Structures are given as structure tokens and as C-alpha cells.
Amino acid sequence: MPPIRTTFHALADRYDGFLLDAYGTLVHGSGVYPGAAEALHLLDRMGKRWLMLTNDASKLSVRASDRYQSMGLPITPGHIVNPLMLLPDLFASRALVGARCRVLGPPDSCTYVTQAGGVVAALDDPAFDVLVVCDESGYPFLETLDATLTDLAHLFAAGRRPVLLLPNPDLTFTKDAHRLGFAAGTLARMLSEGLHARFPDRPAADFAFQPLGKPHPPMYARALDLLSTRNVVVLGDQLATDIRGGQDAGLATALVTWGVSQWRDQQRADVVPDWLVESW
Ligand SMILES: [Mg+2]
Image (cartoon, rainbow, N blue to C red; front, side, top):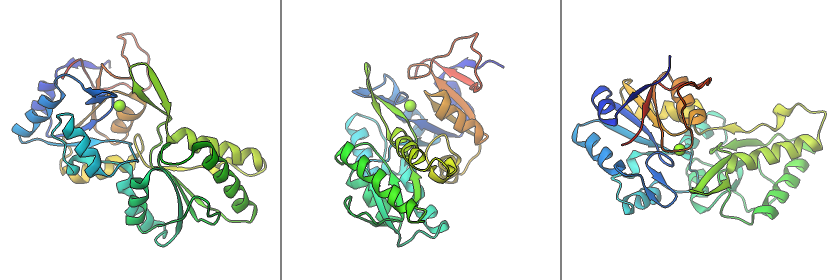
């Protein structure tokens, strides 16, 4: 079944809860898409529940909401679900509270790890139990990647099995209309490949990171807990993350057509959204 073209207003009437992507959906590198702020105000006026699901693992939600509000969007910290918010449950369930953690990311990423019960180690401290790859910013890039590969190789050679966590599994991000950047998922792949090259006889699974963000289930489970309704539609601009993740969570999905993923009517795709929305 191909997706059905509809309007945001029709979706607002039909559903009780809304999970909204940020970049490519509400905002782009240099501002807000036309009508996005009015769409959020409409949901508020209608008494609908809505959250913004982001894979950004580099900012405290208070800082992110300040930024969105300065752009004119009525997004409070309570509207934001990011993958670092999943760390407290994860650290508790995997008995990682008190574990020494190397964190690749800016200071806000470290704050989340500390709040989850991890002990953030200095980047030049070779002894750690957990590696959390949050973001590509906040540290000297190549030096830190090289040192982390080296330290991981020594840990594995010594028979240790450091836990490898990847809050933001995105491979790239859109800086602006013409520029791309590498995101944390690519860094994790570099480290996994580097370790696999170093230890070719070990199964690749030994060096696999545990991903947390979209399209993986934990983010959607957390968001549904917060929304307290199952009559939910996911709106996003990427088939492989927003739409796939929403479908895996059993939710209705709407692809917005002004972001990364385009839709052609004869398209053969393994992920087909329920709805297409062409403007806010
Ligand atoms: Mg997006």
C-alpha cells in the first residue's frame, strides 16, 4: 500500500499523540521550517500530547530547549526525548553504576553519564570499563580516536570486555543545505573496524556497540511511556530512522517531504510510511 497524501491538520484531528523529529522536520541548520511553530501551537490548543525525539547526544535538554525557543518554537525541556535519557535505566540494568566511563562528547554528554551513575574518566586515562560515543565534538578528534582505539586494543588484549555504548547511532548529519558532517555512528564503526582488524580471529560481535537512539526501540518505548496514549503518529524526514523506528514500535508514521528522504510514487521501498505530509 503506498502512503496516503494528507495534511498536518488532518493528522492533528486523527491522533492523540505526536512524536516529532527535529532536524529536517521542525528545523534545519539555519532556522525553522515555515509553519512548524504554528503546528506545535495548534497541538497545544487542541490539547494533544507531543514530544520531540532527537538522537542529539551532545546537549542537556534545558540547553536544547533554550535554543529551540530562541528560534521561536514552543519546545520545553519536558518535550525533548534524547538517547542520553535512557542511560540511567541502562546503567542500572547492566550493573554499570560506579563503572569508569570514557565519554566522547562535549561536557553535557559527560553530565548525563554522571547522572546515570557512571564515573567519567579523563580522556588520557587508559583504564575504563565503559566507552560512550556520544558526539563528534568536544575533544581533539583524531588524537582522541587514535588513543581510544589504542586503549581498547590493550583492554581486549588483556582479556577485558569494555561495554561499548552508542547513544546517537546516526552516521552523518546535515550541517546546512549544502554540507554534511560525520556523526557519532561513524566514529563507532571506525573503532569497531579498527578492533576487528587488530583481532581478526575474534567475532565481530565482540566489538559491536549497543545503539540507543532512533531507529532502535528504547527511544520509542520511553516516549510512549511519557505520552500515555497509543494513538500516536511519528512524523519525520528519514525513512531509515524515523519511519522504520516508528513502524517497529507499532505506530502510525508520516514522512514529511521537505527533509532528507524523498518519496516517488512508483518507489519500491522496504519501509513505507502510512502518510505523506507536504507542508506544516
Ligand atoms: Mg531528521
